[in-house]
Length: 286
Image 1 (cartoon, helix red, strand yellow):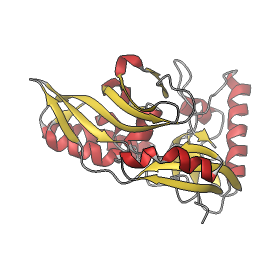
Image 2 (spheres, one colour; image 1 turned 90 degrees about the vertical axis):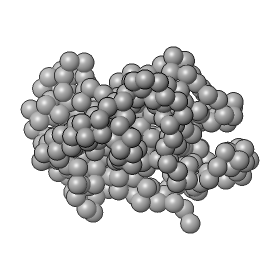
Image 3 (cartoon, rainbow, N blue to C red; image 1 turned 180 degrees about the vertical axis):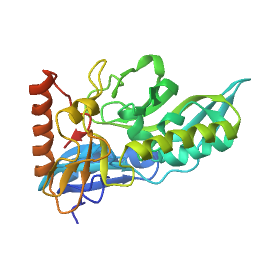
Image 4 (cartoon, rainbow, N blue to C red; image 1 turned 135 degrees about the vertical axis):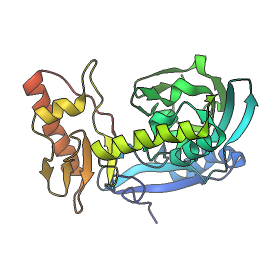
């Protein structure tokens, strides 16, 4: 059966892909090129679908995703820090909970982000001034051209919602090593609760959403611009911008990707007309 993108994205829209390849171990990566050649279509790495808007209809895609991950692992320690290896398939909420229990700090700002480690690295996910690549020591990436490669952080170009390992064609984050600071578990958990409570009060964390729709322009807030342009709470069919935060698109039920794309374009044009600022998408449209 053709895999449903609506079932594989947090926003819950989209048609179907041609096929899905689930990689259960590194040996499975060796068989991936032949499988992709047999299946046809364009390969696309898919994590937990938390930053994606899939178009309607049949998509010329073969989804590639890692199977369920095991526990993180401390691979090295010094007096004040530790290195932790985490699989790409590991969910961020599970990783953060484990780090807090271990007394390892540095990623508390990512609390409330529903994605996985692989997707978070691939888009350099972050919030409240903290990005995952701030704590990235190295990453293992599989590509069709080069196979499995391990890259130290200094070999990677990364910035605001940008991650460029310098690899052409299809690639997939397999695992990451994070450099974290030691702290008291209670203090880490308190910071996580503070971040989560703040997000719960200002963002639609309980709704079907893809997170922020647009990137913040330099020195500005996309949410503030959209709010001023009248997009907070705006709806089109079953899709709309959140009443809590104007930069979050919410699936109210019964909507389509076409409606989502249309209201996103209306929002972009409204901000352009009012402020002469061009908003760039953060959500990935496929």
